[in-house]
Length: 306
Image 1 (cartoon, helix red, strand yellow):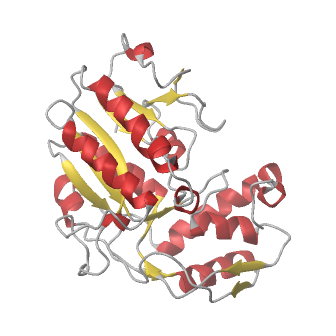
Image 2 (cartoon, rainbow, N blue to C red):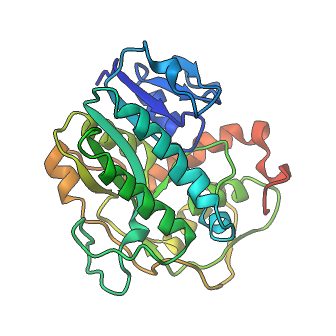
């Protein structure tokens, strides 16, 4: 599927490189270029306060991946959620309100849903609780911005479940973190194996997002698999792939202990279904990150917690 008039912000992050690599006609926009294995055109954006570099560029669809999902840091800083997740989106929507877009896609989280009132699988119409913590509140404010610009910027807000896939970055996500740990020379631990979540492979997420660009729908869309898997099962698969023991620390963890997305809306809109089982996605993720281990040496980086 070709998207010659689509631009993507956030090509140097977690999901952005996968979308760009899968769809080489999408143009990257940002202060940082995508990783070296991504060959897409990149337009440097020196200052997010000035988007005029795009004034004469022909596009009508935007994938906006600017933001932070590092809730551990955001929840301990008074304005970090606003700085990373709200203000950049506000600046982008203000600019794109002057352009005639066909679609703008941005991203929030399934953590918005009220854990005390949810029923499974969780659909988009279920009640939310935006006041859980700083991170969730910043994502709620992002969705309110989308509503404010709804008449001028046709937007889909994707509420992500747990996504995983290969990355060179050190991130808070459980799967890449575990893979970086098993590739290190150090003993491997996981906080808790009991949580059961909905894990979506990056390549499958990329396909769903690009398909949604061509729909007439606006509003929130859940993106997951509709299938649950435990952290314990993920640990077992990674032990089999790496031959390395993963020790369960049995510590308390944040977030729901069980979550499963209702993906009927995205399936109805796009006829999309995830193509990878958890075993297939983890194997592809592990093998690619194994190939990067000598280059990245995550366990030696100052920001690592290995």
